[in-house]
Length: 151
Image 1: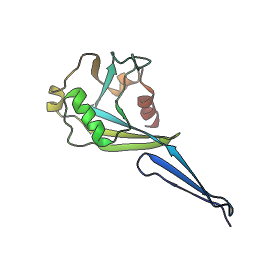
Image 2: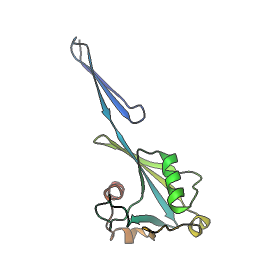
Image 3: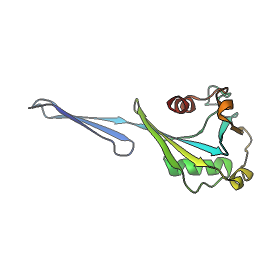
Image 4: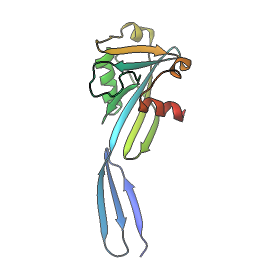
């Protein structure tokens, strides 16, 4: 009998089955963390945010894309609507990365003139557009750095 293995990923749950030489089947379940990251652009500039009032963020000087843990494209679109007032009609999946039991989905949406004029800037959250040249000089959070390193 030959050993075989298979991996299936239903939603956010990973189940690994390994058949071991006649000893039956061993099943192990591992939880997967999914992070959705949304890149918003407007006229060749990138919208980044920085939270000044969040005590869970270690370095408050880091700029970041819009991120949602255990989210998908719909939840990240709702989060952007809640935090900026912008209603996005759709987003486009740029890249999916599976790394150390973390699935990272990077999405993109292009803002219109109307969207930018309707941006709501809440107290404690800074929003700013940057060119690619300016982004190279910024201190970014790890997820944002990862995307720029892959591009």
